[in-house]
Length: 196
Image 1: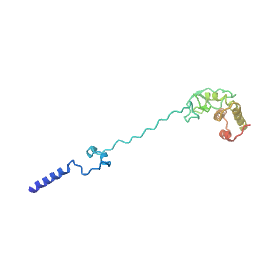
Image 2: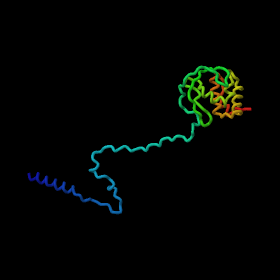
Image 3: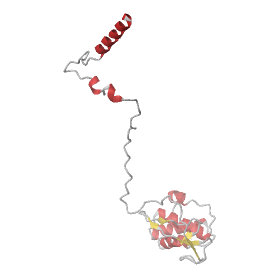
Image 4: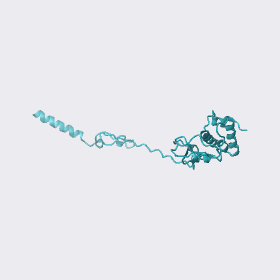
């Protein structure tokens, strides 16, 4: 029993000695203390994941200061509403494809679109928009020669000052309207072709 009491007393003395509030070592006042920046162990509690770091939100895209887009947007063509077949001036024959009604948008480069509805029908408002700028291309007719199409493109560019994007749209409309099956790349012609 004496041994048990001595063991108990020794445990109490050790426990009392370990629970003193006196620091074992102190940093010099001029030295920054790394330990001072750490939280007290009792404040840590049970380990748990901290909040996930917040990622700064990316800035929202700001709208372009331009009044309208410069190029044709990549949005899908509109469904549109079909309309009865009719001759669209300056053409003199009925179109080879259906026609539709859908709103168009004018772009900053003078071009406009969409040209076609989702079904492939020509948007009547697009044809009407390009008619004053591309009357030669839009009136070439069915089965033209390559020379006739090139001459029409040159005439519209020279006389009406149609921009190259407008000429491309006019050509696409005329090719669909008349059902042209020409092996002709208007982009290549615009870069390398020659107009009189």
